[in-house]
Length: 304
Image 1 (cartoon, rainbow, N blue to C red):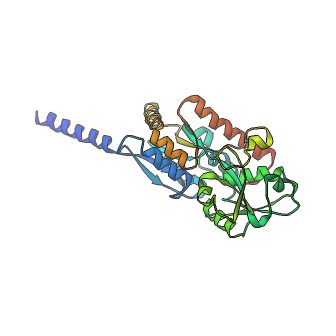
Image 2 (cartoon, rainbow, N blue to C red; image 1 turned 180 degrees about the vertical axis):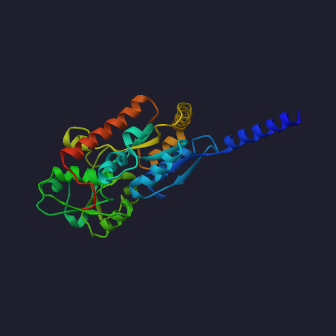
Image 3 (spheres, rainbow, N blue to C red; image 1 turned 90 degrees about the vertical axis):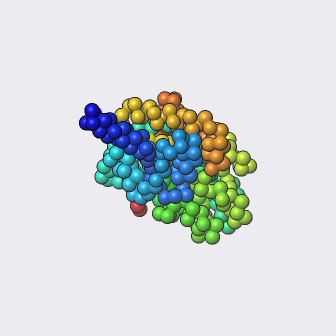
């Protein structure tokens, strides 16, 4: 009887330990960025104490991705751009994005906004397209969403404008834009928001209707913005299907929380949250469009 009681106690302790173990919600970027902010907002709608947000920045998100690949009971919050760009940016990835990672939820689209320093004399997006002046475009590193959308606009322009990478991220390029060290940035709206009313800057066009009193891409070019970057939640493909479904159910509940959705909108995200196959298909389709753009334009995503 004592042995049976001891075994039951050990079993109860083990079960309790598993129940108390939190699931890591990994952000492969530094605190304060788009992925970090949106993850912490979503976490407020998840079961209390079940998840913990940790930051694993560096190496183009590879540190964070490698971290969740080592243990299947983890989630990764990031922009889909890292899945598109990393195979081109790094020669020896330790993972295959299509094979080893599954998107289980979309959070929303990260809008892009073209903004130029007033001294550049660019008064509209058309001026950027037709000017003979060589403009310096700030980008948050090669392979970033800012890089791809800048390449898109430059490919449509009369002049092959110059790219200036900022490895410290989107905020540093905007600080330099305000200071007049570069001419333009096609920035993520979430990063741009604190700078939006700066008198040194002029907003020229946006990928979506953000209430900025400038033309949207659809209005200007009569077709939707072709390089959508989704904020997504990802898990290792080998994750147990029951656990994967449990995580999706938790995320679905979080997306029903009105405070969570309103906070995501205030963060600058164009919210399209969901866990249904149709939601996932939109993000996958956006990835494929970005792949085609990189290949057809023969864009070099490695440091130049």
